Length: 134
Image 1 (cartoon, rainbow, N blue to C red):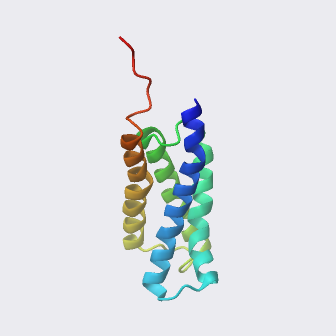
Image 2 (cartoon, rainbow, N blue to C red; image 1 turned 90 degrees about the vertical axis):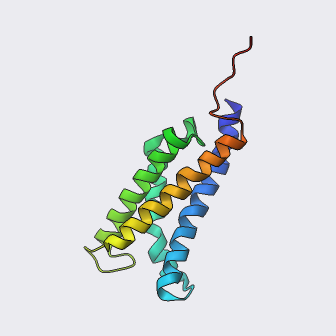
C-alpha cells in the first residue's frame, strides 16, 4: 500500500510533464514560437482531459500500472482532449480537428502515457503484486 501511495505524486508529475511537452512540441512545430498565450490555448484541452482521466480511472489505486491505469489515462486524455479542442477551436478552427493531428496525438500520448509506466513497472520489480514466499 505504501508503494502505491509513494508512486502517486510521481505519476501525476510525469503525466502532466508528458502532456504539456506534447502540446509544447506541437505548438512550436507549427507556430515556431513559445508564445505563452498560444501554449496555454494549445495545452488546456489536454491538461483538463488528463485531470478528468485521473478521476475516471482511479489512478490512486494503481498509479504506475501500464494496462490497468496507463491505457485508461491515455484513452480518456486523448479522446476528451480532442473533443475539447474540436468544440472550442483551441489551436485551430472550431469544429475541425485534422486527422493527421488525431493520429499524432493518439500515438504520441500512447507511447508516453503508457510507455513510462511500462518502464517504471519494470524498474520497480514487476507488476507490483506481492511475491509468494515458499
